[in-house]
Structure formats: C-alpha cells, structure tokens
Image (cartoon, rainbow, N blue to C red):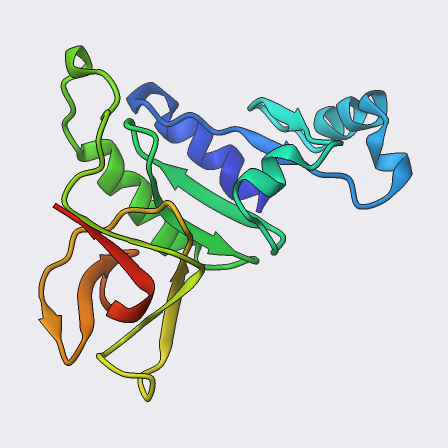
Length: 175
C-alpha cells in the first residue's frame, strides 16, 4: 500500500490531496518513535504519519481492519474507504472524483448534515435491494450518503463509484 500512497501523494498533492498515515503499533517494539522514524526513511514515506500508540485514531474511526484507507472530503466527511490491499485503481478514481468537486472555501466546513442517510452501525452495501445480493462494501456510523431512491425498504446510494443499496432498517434519515 505504501507505494500507492507515495504515488498518490506525489501526483495529487498540488491538487489538494493530503495523505496522512496512522501507525497503530501491533507489538511493543513498534511503539518506539525512533524506530518508526527509521522505518519511514527506509520505506521512503514522504507524507506525515501519526504515531497512534493510544489507539485513539484507530478507535475514533471504529476501525477493525488493517490496512484501512479512508478518503475524507474537504468538509470532513468520509466518502470512501477500503480495507486490505488491492482496489488501487478504484481508490485512485475516487481520489480524482473528490479532487474534481468544487467547494467554496469561504463557506467553511459544513455545519449541518446534508439531506441523506447515515447508518446507526456498520452497514453492508449490497449490489441490489435485498440480502440475496452480493455485498459490495461497508459504511460506518457517522458517514452520510445521499439517497437516490427507495425500493422495497432499501435505499439506493452511490458507494465507491457504484450504485449500492442499504437496508432502511439500519439508517437514520436527515433532510
């Protein structure tokens, strides 16, 4: 994952992408900041990395997987996430889409949630309305998605560039 993050940092930083790593140590020896600094030099990591010894950032995102990648828009909303290796082309496409979005900086970050839905727990996104369809991703509590329709108690959303469906039983609607 580091080579892709390095490449995205180099290619898109001038367009507004900010890459920040988060190091949550699995073993006690990984808590040593000097060892982490040495590893960052050895691995040629050009972006900042947070040392998360207290697991605070890890917990704030309710993270349970490693590696985890989150794309956060200019208003501070999680708009894309991927767990594990892979999906590099889809992730780069999501980066390009977010960088193309316009946002009036004078308005500042959004103070209220836009009309949409947010899950009350980690929620499967399915390829169609119903549990018989494949799971194409997950969304976490606090993430907000625009609803694009409703079918049989399932809300249609855009998720990681695809149409997806989430059960209406596990979301809170706003707007």
